[in-house]
Length: 436
Image (cartoon, rainbow, N blue to C red; front, side):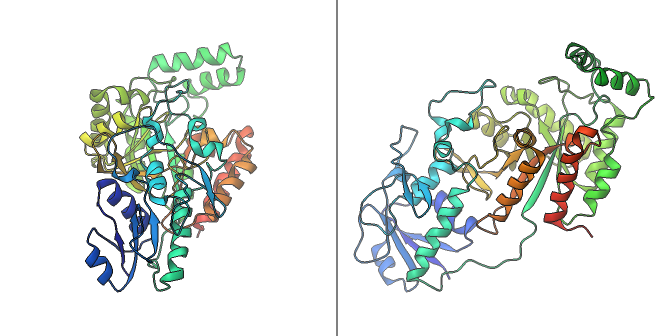
């Protein structure tokens, strides 16, 4: 059953947010009209979105945010609806007490990241600056929850209005982030020397001895267990994605020997069985030539177009970084999350298109929410971290939502101090994929 929405002016913001909520989140066909005659004559499910109701129809108050252009300070007017925190609350004539579509656009467009804020030590937008932190709702996909609750309200008047019931794959999609494919091998000499000196400085005597033994070929590299890991993964019903850092310029000590034939063979071997693509270096966000070079080198290595990316260390500037990706015809980015916090940066678990606020249009770049990175998980015990992930995936409000989690290859290492993390990781995959 299709849904018709009346609004006095169909803007790009309006089309963007309505299609995201109804088509991509709820999977309900939707039509728009600015014609009163067409709206009145329509026999099916419908509602108006305007500053005033037309009559006695199902009406949602529009505060005007979706008709604006450019970026300006917004009075968020926080409130509550059902058990959820909301934005743009009001006391006007309306079936719901807030502008759901303005609030959803504010979240999905990452509007708050275009306003002044205090950056973290790496120049990124910190989770503590987001409005959802003050509401204690970072771990809730509020946009999806609002959409489901609004659908239930619509169904009171239009009980035949139902989402499609398509068969879905597993909602759990692990991302394997390989900034250091091996612990000691496949790195430039200066990087290995710095690694050795840091271990000495910190008096990590086992790391010093281990590096010497590995470099002398008397001990296997601790990370050289890809065959065992990929065997585990091949038994699973879900398909993880591998993101390899492939750059000579180090960031926080991470760099790879891109001309090493064994490293190239490792990446090619993984790409034969799994989706394999670029983990773009953090500094490539500031240099278009470096970004283009990293994409080109990975493309030349695996002989496939690089259309899925993730930035090592997180996104520093959404507008500038995503503009560069668009110039290079990247179609998917998986950096939409916080490096050190568990939760939904854009308040949704459903992929959504990047909206260019500076030029007011929907781009073809699809952003995939990542609910957690390993750095954020390891702020907790292994038990608490995976308990959180299991709870969050079980609470996904729609079948269109996914749980993408970024794990590094340290998660599956067999070192004594990592055994609990390794066990919890494979239990997590088994629980949500089902080993054969």
